[in-house]
Length: 217
Ligand code: G3P
Image 1 (cartoon, rainbow, N blue to C red):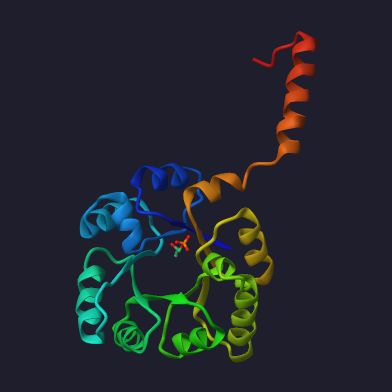
Image 2 (cartoon, rainbow, N blue to C red):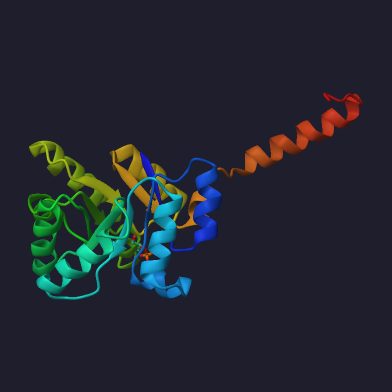
């Protein structure tokens, strides 16, 4: 499973990148707002830091304008992935931009049928939003499983990018189902290493080691 970091915070990306945890980055207008940065500048900085795909989202609602914005974003660096919303205009933009050889991430996916038509429009990535479905008492993970089944039935190459991940269980559940990629905030990725029994066991080892009076170095 590829790990993307869902943030536009350079320091957090750099820290996780040093650990080899960053196969790509996803941003959206809300994350750009949160960063306080200019989208073109921060996207360039992220692309300089990370080798993998870096999603930058268009903001127009009309296909023609999305295409123009997408082309401008794609000029920033070869690893920019143009992110478009799952609307008919977004799908038109996806078809054109992917036809030009650009990577396209179709976002705000909440149903299996939406994922099916995004694949037909040539999406490189489809972003089903797990957490936001769970928020309204639906099952985000069921959607990941449905999309996996449909894509496998027909050999679609569109990668399932599990998004709106809020918990560590979302990560392991999406991995078990076979999502190609997950994108999560830095805090969730950091939590993947944590377990209370690890902390407890380590404390016991440290205490026993002190009693031996030995040193290794
Ligand atoms: O990648 C999409 C993601 O940023 C949405 O997450 O937590 O705002 O639903 P969230």
